[in-house]
Image (tube, rainbow, N blue to C red; front, side, top):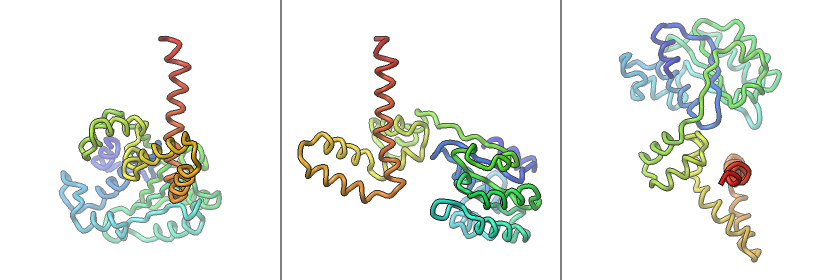
Length: 255
């Protein structure tokens, strides 16, 4: 955040940024705040204000100088990047800069990645690209090399816990969620808001139950979860297994 603030203050903005780090550590939030600061009409001290017309348009992703790209189904296609290239042909309408935000940039297929590379090599002076990814190594190597990297580290457990307590979670629940999150505020909130701890409890009880009825009911409940919810749900027992493995191999021999 300090790096981006200094770039704005000194008017030394890069034409492309690569925000990388684990899921749920604030990459997208920071990208919107960065774009908001560039678009906002409030005084320098108040940017982004979240209340001016420009900020409201950005929040709704309808600002004329902002373009959001994310995977359609499982990948980002060349047709999407062609729309980006058409978008950046024209100068900004309302702001000094236009911003192109690409989520899950590692999911660009080869044709899309090569098409974007051409724009990154010769970008318009008024365009800023922000690419978000959890894994830069899965990208076409020449793309990260054309961007200024900005690493997002895991958030300290104590900060996650404190944030959750401010959101109204009880001490014990906030502590459990903070530990499970492994430094990801997004994961902590998603586990809480979707009730996945309760689902896990029901899953464990059904697993140890001798009857098939409980197993069938929990299978029905899991079938209603989305793909992303299922991935997060099965992350929880995996975390506990790794913790147990660490305890028996590292901690127990020393006791």
